[in-house]
Length: 273
Image 1 (tube, rainbow, N blue to C red):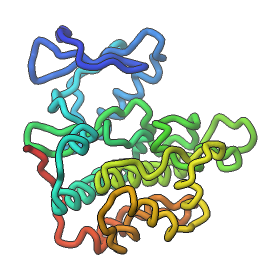
Image 2 (image 1 turned 90 degrees about the vertical axis):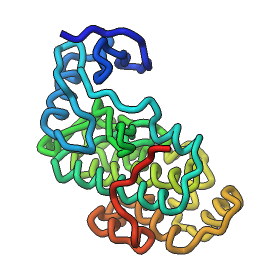
Image 3 (image 1 turned 60 degrees about the vertical axis):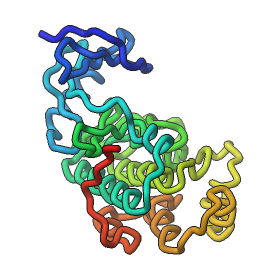
Image 4 (image 1 turned 90 degrees about the horizontal axis):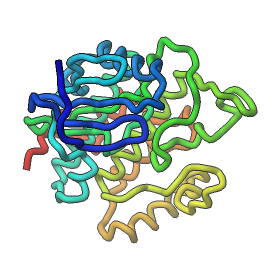
């Protein structure tokens, strides 16, 4: 029996509490959140048990009991700490390994972002929050979930989703959508700000328009002014492969893992400060 104590965070579908056992937390679902979605998250976490994914201890219809990790997520670390170049490269390589391994376990996450990457007591990166995740064995799923600033352009395009007003999207497309969101995450690890505000057609984001038109030199000229340090071509090439507007041109994670930008970097970064 697990009893909740202090509220840690509040979300749209659930609240997270400390429990009487300091090793665990409780993710308690709100009454409006469908039971089917609750059980799907629990079943996926049971299916993908491994060292780089948050560990589920047990579950009921109303809550999940999860291992307790450090309070800081990767977003907070990026904003508060100045990572050196080796830590940046190792963080990027570790995240590629984690998402690639998750896909090879036949799961798409669908909400990859800095806030969903936590740190364990040993400083290792841990992927969490599988509330939007899907098994690749499902042929189609409901469309357009995730976090807007990380969302790839295809999730705004009716034609890729099965026609006008379609509610379904192929899980195979979602592999490439995860890769795009991973690219947005890696961009922030390197530069500490977002690569654009939105990929929505009506968003009128100049930075995204340059990417969409593949005017990369214009794009990097603006980014150069924003970051105020020299951006090496190898870094530009690395990130461009994730942020391609066309899913067929987007990075393959097996191949990008060996990119020259990541040379001499390990894939098990330690972020204890």
